[in-house]
Image (cartoon, rainbow, N blue to C red; front, side, top):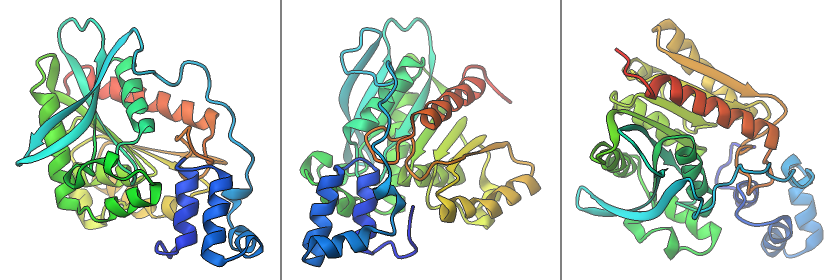
Amino acid sequence: MYNDNEQDPVNELVHLYVDGAFDRRELISRVTKLFGSAAAATVALGSYSEVLAQTPSACPANIKVPLDAPDIVAKDVEFTANGVRIFAHFAYPKGVDGKIPGVIVIHENRGLVDHIKDVCRRAARAGFAAIAPDLLSRQGGVQQFPDAQQQTAAYGRTNPLERRLDLIGALDYLKFTPFVHHDRIGVVGFCAGGGNVWDLVVNLPELAAAVPFYGSPVPAVEDVQNIQTPVLMIYAERDRALTGRVAPVMTELLARQKVFGFRVYEGVGHAFHNDTGAAYDATAACAAWAETITYFNKWLRVPHT
């Protein structure tokens, strides 16, 4: 759904709407303030098919996992990475017997919102110890930014190196959790979080599996040679500009005989997995999450050489 001009304020607001930051009424209200009239706002939004789409179907039963779910333990935690206090959400199955694999869950470009905490708990329900760090922690955490535009602006002030270091801190948190297999840790991320997944696998060969959902940016072709982690790439057919950027990466992965999967979900757009947003597609989201868990089960349940 991205336009080439990522600085376009209308494009930014539509992106936030699709990601579930606010409803359609609030979107129109904010665009009206930009242009001075409802008529001008309607014209400005007319090219965005996401705004014209019908309300997404209800999330299927038992997809969401509440904080007090009886089969998991879930809580907000803090840890220190390179002297920086990092906020995170941590969840794991109740009654763990022995060691289990771990998964890092990376949020979109709004910080650790409730939706990503829920995804973290879904990973726990699937049998993993999951941690979702807040990449706005260096600015006081997402709780310091009550408005969605403030959250995206705060994320825009982060940089790749700091994000990588904070995510390595989350990896260390899992590695030193007594009931987690230190060498069977995967990572999943959405949108900008998917871009951070790509950054990690380029720079951190010890990850055992990775799943970027419509991850942006994709890695440079010359960096593909550094990837040692099996990667399942999940993209959307209607997110054509971004999905098209994956083609040279996939060609290089093939040429270098890397281990990867590539799945394009037809008929859906960017952020189709986010059940709080306008682009949510229950069928595609459930299928993609099932594929994600299957991939993690394959690569994290048993050691691979």
